[in-house]
Image (cartoon, rainbow, N blue to C red; front, side):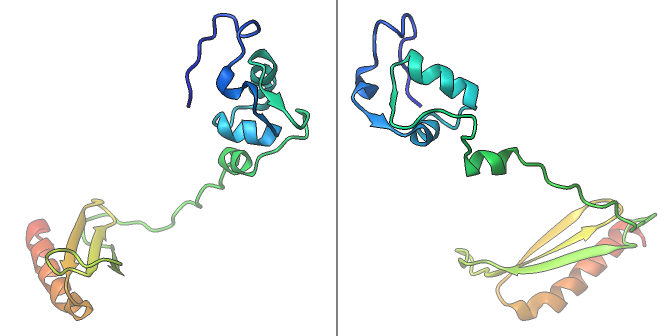
Length: 144
């Protein structure tokens, strides 16, 4: 973003932009994707020349994507009434090995409490051992 004095834009053109003639689309991108009415106000008031007319058919893919709304997720039918009744787990690989040699990670999430346990692993083959350790810890913690 650039800052310029707005005291009297018609009488004092912006020298940095006054000799630049570019498209309406490029001005839209350079000025941070303003809405069409704002762009229609800025260009003539600050004497920013455009090689293409500003029309109502103007569209920007980035703005369309950012202004679109996603459908909400459907309501889950999963129900848990106590801790450890339903556990979610995921194992993933990091593209970079940590300074301690960890390349894999596993998480366990309890559906009821939303507690999350995170374990770094050096080898994927450690998953069973980590799960058994996790299981004994949480069963002891929740008395379940």
